[in-house]
Image (cartoon, rainbow, N blue to C red; front, side):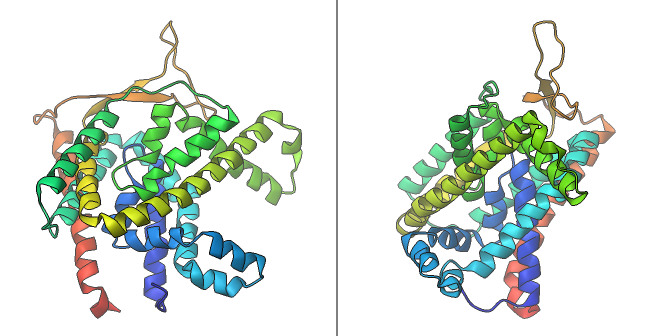
Length: 339
């Protein structure tokens, strides 16, 4: 796991981090799927699992190099760097295309998830009564989550911390979208739009030498919410990684079957042909976020119209999404010869 990485390895790891970050921000798409299909899911979980009492003892003793090696620091640093860059670049590009070409974006994601199902299932040969049952349970849970109704926004700091712990599951559990979970909890806009924009604006002002934000109570409250959410996410990430590393070690076939069922069930969330349902008041007036955008609360799905020219483009992008996964599979098989 701690073997030397070539420049190409490091570059691809940052790119995978970019993909994970973008996927985590899109409702219905799981960063865990990127990790699973990219072939680094187990290394990701086991590296996080190394953040334990021994790691903290190394820090306290001032043995930072030993700590870095122990937690597979090179891997985590490059991956997390890619995720952070994604939140302020790739994810904003993704936001633009979701607004302008929503059908094609969802079609691409739908194809990628179809491809990931093939990717996971093609080499899984341990089908028994137990694994089939596990896959069915995962499927039913995935479908059930897809059709839940969202709650109202809640900025209580304890609830924000819990949101962080729960939402980070999208990074550790393939098929479970952390951003979609935040929609269900009612805090997607607050935590992944408003708070991120507040941080971006604050950093931009600091670079310009403008510190007026210290007198902006709303901005400070939003930044406090972001800090609590980040702490909750870090806590959930480490906690879940310990649980998942144990599960993967002792119940690998069952967990793979559950993941396969869960990803299949999540297809309902990213179904391309759907009508967006916005948050409104009793008079039908739209609720807007801090950027003046209508707040999405759910989707109404329908079957595609084959007489519509856009439908055929959408089908093309589904095939494009599938091809991305096939290329990743090809890259994984030929990686050693490439480097």
